[in-house]
Length: 502
Image (cartoon, rainbow, N blue to C red; front, side, top):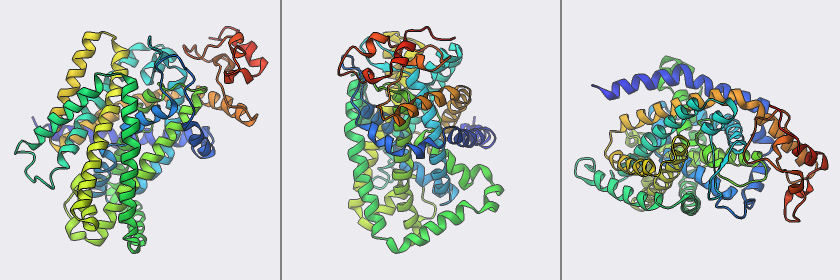
């Protein structure tokens, strides 16, 4: 059976006729309904990053740590290999469509993460978990659909994405070992990744957040510095680079002549793989944060989309296109990570390739951790059996090992299909539940405009479906000088004692 041909057909149909319409529609709709919250409250995104966690006693994580977990998943080899693949397959214009989808998609990211924070649940150790599966069950009262989403996310992240991250990590050695796929080097990489992964996952969510909080910012800064150096050393080519991007983006004859492989489709697919906006993954990290208002994590997850696509993906894109413009003959026929390595080598030689290779390993490893975090949260939604969890963890380790030796076309196709399936479910659900995110945003805006640090009380939103973590009694609102809720109005305090409207 030709699995590559079969997955090609499924992939093409899903994105051409279903997902592209949903993604664009969601981005536009949520941007308009939130009055472009991703632009209006851009400053607030940075302000809330440093907010300390409000649950002092439990093992909940801070706003910054939650952002690092989501960014760890977003900032993976997709920022390097995905961008290069999109440019090689769809042309430089794919970059423009990645930018556009990030700007629009950040509104979808805001809505899904705000919903996840609102309907998160508390674990026995004081930590939080949540995401689409949880708000599907609590608001729509359809646990079966939540289970379907959870399964699709597990297939996407534990099987599709982590297998792909392992493959891209192994392929980064192609420069040093041209026959890495057949001489045992790919299997060796798989063993190393699986071993490091095992050390990480047999800890807890707090240790995962600490690892990603250290790896992600450090390597992102190193990679950005490298990219900026390449760009500044080729400033004279930038006008031509941007001209190529925009000319290719609006070459409508080539777009509609082969839409499935066009710059629009490649930009949307690789952009979604990279920033995950609207896909239903980042809300799992957003729900884990201890914050005073759900909107705060919604804004922070929107910022994470910007960091991923408008900063890191753009760095990779400009490096690659500079190389393609400067030496088109050498760039012809090269794709993925080797294309990025050649682009850096064109300026810095082998030292540059070593830095990119190391960055790929760090990005891939942090992304594997972040992906696993999402998968585990959804596995726990299905069952809390410790034995089943152990088997699941061993399965995830095996996937990482096998992924390192996979076929590139099949690896990308599987990741795209699983990603598309879970995105379709989540986008339909947040269309249905978006009205609650809008009302919660209005609550945030009202408090913000009154000069307060917004604090959320579920009963302040008439008709809001019952929540587990935002029930606050009136006496609690004024019980401590350190409690920011003390400054909340007496009217809201009174409302907090009233039963919720079903």
